[in-house]
Length: 332
Figure 1 (tube, rainbow, N blue to C red):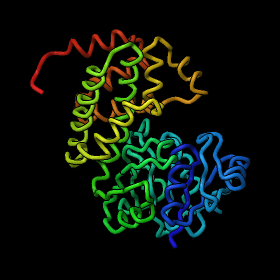
Figure 2 (cartoon, rainbow, N blue to C red):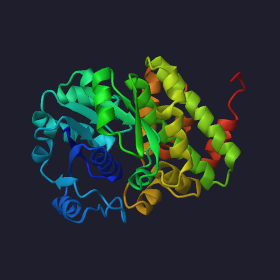
Figure 3 (tube, rainbow, N blue to C red):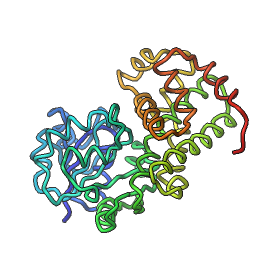
Figure 4 (cartoon, helix red, strand yellow):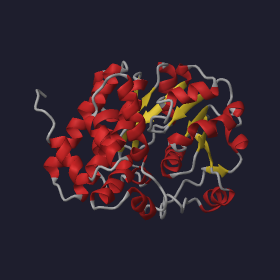
């Protein structure tokens, strides 16, 4: 039986651990806090992130990373993207040399502007073809409720990709393989910024035309950057591109969409953060790193640039809308 270690007990890490168990994979989840690990193992719930939802009795939890990783065929990384490097540095020596490393994270590292798979390869000393990326319309709570969804498993090694695919092929979770790691990761990272913008527009009282326009132009923005980095354009029309973008921009379950709504209603970044129990939406961090990455490649990303100014500059949401609408006209 395939054995998996999921490092991270947030909503998506816990949900993916459930998916693995339901797919027949022997799975251990690592939680930073011993009391949470004990609750997951004993009561089969994660009250901090998936309140009210039952976890499989077969899912084991531990606060000892070495115990979780020991003998794992799959090491699944599910920590916040900006905390990956620090955490992985402490785990790298524990990972079996042939294990497949799986990234659930959607972001670009601040400072280095590296994708998560690149950080994993660098810190773990792993070849790129040992790293797989899971991305798609994956709102954790809906999946934990076993609502049907599909996802992408991207890996340049097709055999490893198929191996991960089988390990997470649950009755309600349909994984498709893809070799375009670059496009899959960019779709997951940039969509958080676009969802932030959609939430802000909704918070300002704008309707579906505005949201649809932001989604569509956000997809164009993502595609331009992806093509410059060598991604397959087809990826952005699929689950890891359009699928993930629509789910994150439209759902109230999306932290980025909800955080953006608070900004649109006039809350400051600090007020929105306090209202979300100190958690900052990934798009707030990603807008800065995505903007820098695009700048290095000479790619125009107007929505990302405006959101960066809203989050880190002095641009008010109403002025952001005016700025985007006053851009020079051109062919689509």
